[in-house]
Amino acid sequence: MTRLRTDIWVSALIRRASAEGAYVTLARRGAAEAGTIFLLVDRLTGEIDLYGPAPQSAFFDEDRPSDRLFSLLLGAAERRKVEERIESEIRFDPDLWVVEIEDRKGRPFASLAQESG
Image (tube, rainbow, N blue to C red; front, side, top):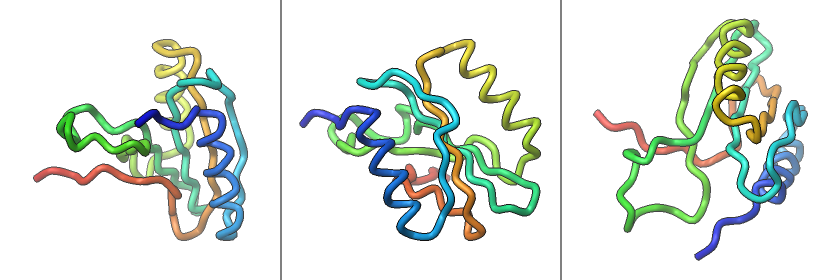
């Protein structure tokens, strides 16, 4: 099974989050075909959650879902810390996407990897 192009996946995420009442902006457009996606979830309390691609260790190859999985990278962080992390990621991968979601409930509107432990 092939994975959905990143630009189409991001567009669907924006529509889904907007339909649920969140305000969503595309803060950075990356590679249309296969760019990595980061999600900033602002609860409008001054703290932000940053989600990124789940590590490969989050699932076995035979269990690898066709949908993208995310994990929490920074929780309840200051905007400055989140921006520093994104800048670091951009230096590593300049083709990444950044989607910013303002949602008081803190929903990322994406599938999350199960945390181990």
